[in-house]
Image (cartoon, rainbow, N blue to C red; front, side, top):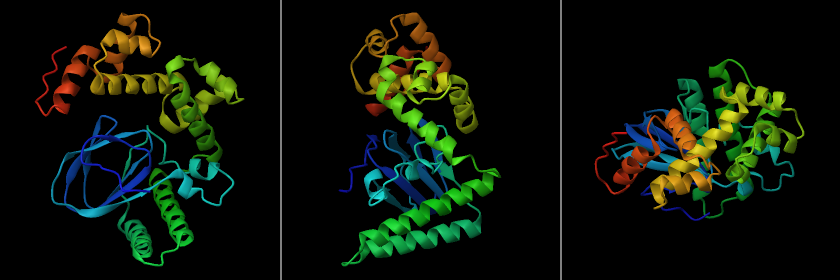
Amino acid sequence: MDEPDVDDIHKHTFYEIIWIERGESRQVIDYQEYAMRANSLFFISPGQLHSFEEWKPVTGGTIMFTADFFLLNHSNPDRLFELSFLDNFYANPCLLPDPDSYAEIKHTIDLLVAEHRRADRSLPICQSLLHVLLHQVQRSINTQTGQAVSKRYFVIYKNFRNLVDAHFLENSTASTYAARLNITPHHLNEVTKRITGKTATEVIRSRSILEAKRLLTFTDQSVAEVAARLNYFDGSYFAKLFKAEVGLSPTAFKASAQAIARGKSPNPTQ
């Protein structure tokens, strides 16, 4: 893939792993701010908004790859879904491995970078090293959490997320999505609560609110137009949901977000 322009806020169409060896900085992923510290890793998935809030001298690097590259010559697309830290927008995108795990992960990164720099680099070797790296990360996460969630649950959850991303404008119910997945609404709720701590309805609503934030930030659409686009035809109900999720009214959020985009200090008052 071509190296993307990531100087400003951008929407990812690829996966990205950022590792920091020394220094500190800050970045924003889907409107949430995270501190970047030494020996930490960050994971960003397609569809997420990403920007660096603060540039400071740091040492580290980034690996960017597409789903197509990960799945190259593999017939089972669920292999990608089985990694809990990718496409899981409710998980903390930051990992602080223990020193031994970080050294192991960094060693694989060094091998991958060295292979990529070779004039005769091998894509199968790069892909194999990428798989090793991602499974090392998953093992570190499982060690920290003390338990591994069923791979089947992650496959169901990520298929659910894909459906929500494709159909959130329809404002469909959790039961509708469960039917599309050929499971019961109860089982869908069990899966989403196990992985995210939220019900399926809350996951659907959060995706809708995230889209509202993006529209309020990057378009000139009014709050009423955004609500209607998301199939909320009761403007007051939409405003109530938005404020409960975000902590600001849609009007205040729009003013603050657009002020930041213009490089001015926000002054949310509503």
